[in-house]
Length: 359
Image 1 (cartoon, rainbow, N blue to C red):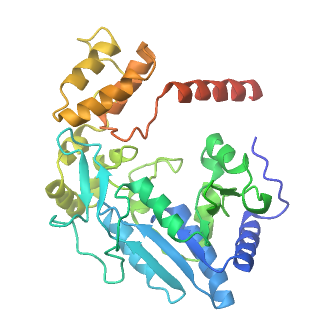
Image 2 (cartoon, rainbow, N blue to C red):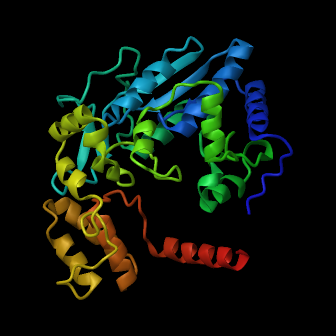
């Protein structure tokens, strides 16, 4: 059971937290993704900024392969007079989980045929060197603004792991809803104790604009519990959205098919048990190791084959691990974002055992 130790509504608590941050930080930086949680956090911070006649920084890392509905919402959020837009449309290499021949989408790359034109109020160029990978870019951006309070729309209600991640190591001034890095970056999660119902109630009560892709997901009978995910369309953790993309946004789907390979295949097969899925071993293989070796041997590019092979050599040598490695190969998890290394497996097992004892 999660115990947040508050005797007030989550809305009151969130507003008090954000007010505290405005009292202590000159720059309030809100990370927005067009998802419902970050949208709610954005408006909570904006309401406080308006009250104090101040501004907030709205940070959005545009990965080009985005829903059109996401971009439409961003245009609304970024144009408010109390908002300093930090809409980044700079070249980045995005992992493509849908193709074995085109490993990356070079989003906003020079000389590339982009899916859409860049926005007039976006940041389109960075002087000097910067990391051209997604997660490293986040770290780089935070280091450029170390004195800011970084607000993130993470909610502990989504999993016990997230609850533990936020509350285990209190950050700034010992606050349970904050964390700080070894580099002194202060991150805050003002709505960490909100439920999905709280989020949608806030949007409804204030008649706020939100990503209209949620309406289409709802009409397609998506569950509100973790299935309604708004993210980069080719990401290794969210590419299954391509199944319904032709129905939700036909024009976006057509543009994406022209932009990068593997989209049509993923759209057709992402929900099946074998393609992009390592739950069932194909009938003509007796062991997961045999299937893994087949996939590894047939990687088209030698550099990627060596990368995966070197990683696998350092991991456990058993069928459970081979099955996990098949999962990585099927979705081209070049960056090891779905990490299955030995230490993580041991840690995961210990966490599971601990929670089973509690439950």
